[in-house]
Image (cartoon, rainbow over all chains, first blue to last red):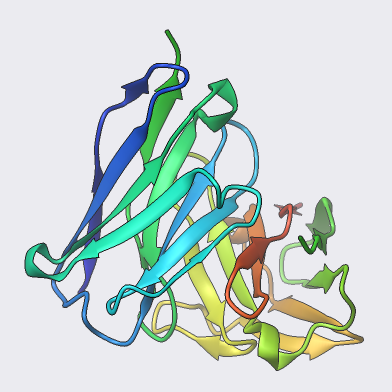
Length: 115
Length: 109
C-alpha cells in the first residue's frame, strides 16, 4: 500500500517561503497518477493548491499560481511544494495526496506563518 | 475561478438515506469534471470515497454511491450509520486545476 509523508518546517516567517516535501513509499511516483497538494486552514475547508505528474507537468490553483511551485524528484520518489511570500492566511494543515484508482493521503503537517 | 457549491449541513436518521450534491458555477457538472467525494472526520486526514463520478475504492462502504443528478454530482448514503457522521467534500476538475466544494457537515441523528 502506498504511503505518503509530508515533511518540512512547522513555522515560517511572514514574507518567507514555505517548503514541504512528500515522500512516497510502497509505490512509484512514476505511475500514472497525478500528485496534488491540498491545504486546510484551521477550522475551515479544503483548498486545492496544485498537482504534478511524474513527467513534470503541473496544474496550479489560479489564485495561488504566482506564488506556487511544485516539483518532482523521481530518483528520491518524492515531490515538493514551495509557496513564497507567505502571510498569516497561509497558515494551514498541508496535505500531499495521490488521487485516482489509487488514492492515498498523507497525514498532513501544520505550517504556521508567524514572526 | 469556478465556485463549487455543497449543502453546508444535512441531517439523516440512522438507517436513513441522504443525498449530498455538488454544483458548479460554470454550469452542469459532467463526467468530464471527474467528480471526487471525500470524507473527513475531526483530527483526521481526508479519505477518498468516490472517484471519477461513481467509482469506489476497496475501503468505500457499499452504502455510499456516486452519480450525476440534475446537473450536479451526487453522493448518496443509503442506510446511514453513526460512524458516517463527518464532513464531506467534493472536488471537481476544470481541465486541470481542481476546485473543492465548501463541504457538507453530515449529522446522523
